[in-house]
Each structure stands twice: as C-alpha cells, then as structure tokens.
View (cartoon, rainbow, N blue to C red):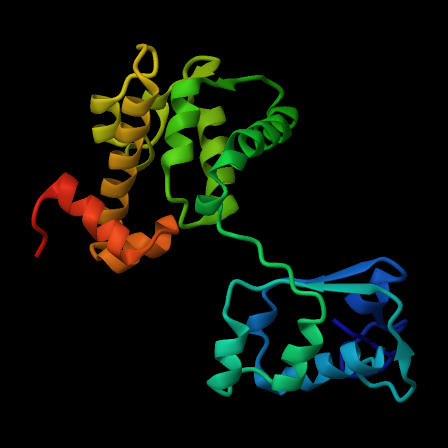
Length: 242
C-alpha cells in the first residue's frame, strides 16, 4: 500500500518500490472492503485520511497524499465500532460523505440495463453476440441475488458461454433462478390481465424468499416490506405456517 525505500529489508529492490498510494497520484485511490482491515493497521489509514501523509517502509520522510479516497465495504462499520473491531475516529473520517448502495434485489428495475451492459462487455471478449429474451429477463429480475452484482456477472458470463442458441430463454437459466413454480404458473408469451401477472409475480417472489429464509422476518428484510405484511401474504399463499 505505501511502498518501500531502497534497502528497506533483505531482498528489497535496489530502487525501492512505489506503493498504491503513490501510484494513485492526483487521481482516485479506491479502498475496497475497508472493514476487513485489522485494528493493527487502522491507525496507519487514519493518519493517511486525517493528515494526508504517510511513510514508506524503511523511510523517515513524510510523503503527501494527493489522491481522492473512496472506500467501500459490505460490513456494518457502526456495529463494528460498538464491538471494538473498528476505530471510531477512522469511522468518522470514512463517513464524511457516505453513499448507501442498496442490494441488487432492491434495484430490480436496474437489472435489464445491467444485464445488457455486462453482456456487451463479455461479448467483446468472446467475439460473439447473444440476447436475453423477456422470459429470461423476468426470471433474472425475480431472483434475490444474494451475491449481488458479482453473482449477476457470473450468471451472464455462464449463459453466454453455455447457451446453445443466440437467444437465451428462461429454460436456459440455472434452476434456482428460473424457478419451477415460476415456469409453471406464468408464461410471458401468453396475454393476461396485468393484475394477474403482478399477483403471480408477487406470489412466486414470496415463495422464493420463504424457501431461502424460512422466517417471515427474513422474507420481510429481503423484500423490503413490513414483517406483518410478509406474514399476512405468506399465510394467504401457503396457509398456516409453523
């Protein structure tokens, strides 16, 4: 991260080595998964953020940080502070301008555009073109995506590599995404009333969440609804739940 000076340790390069902080220059330094940094190193990052200075390994001359810093984490840093796993002062420095990015399951309307973007990127790499039809996109939109964007990227790449035709249908998707109940109850090639389409989609989404979490609290949290609403809707679909 900070690099080292010439002769800083045995085996070091004679000319020293530029660290990532120095390499960022006047650009942007992205610190991914900042919540995984151990307490023993957090003081160094606090100094970097607070004073905009750092020392190379084996160095005595302070160097200046010129880059903008963006940090990301999937962990609850506030909870980590309470558990004495993360420094409070570093937490405050990192949350100067917090941006909360909801999980993919909470941004389902973004999925078609994301699929198209990811597909185009992989098509440039593989050198051929495939398309996801409406049925496939509907299944992708109904999936809970516990792995978020990385899981979506994995599925799109897999489909581009394994599909036997240039049009990817719902039946080509993995079973946990296509969903047997969804396939049986809803056919997007048929015309139906909008209210029936919405009802079937909601029922299948609730059933998928129930199979995954097995509690109304978990279902409510995953779908972004009240626990009482999740319980009422699930009782209507599944009957009395133990």
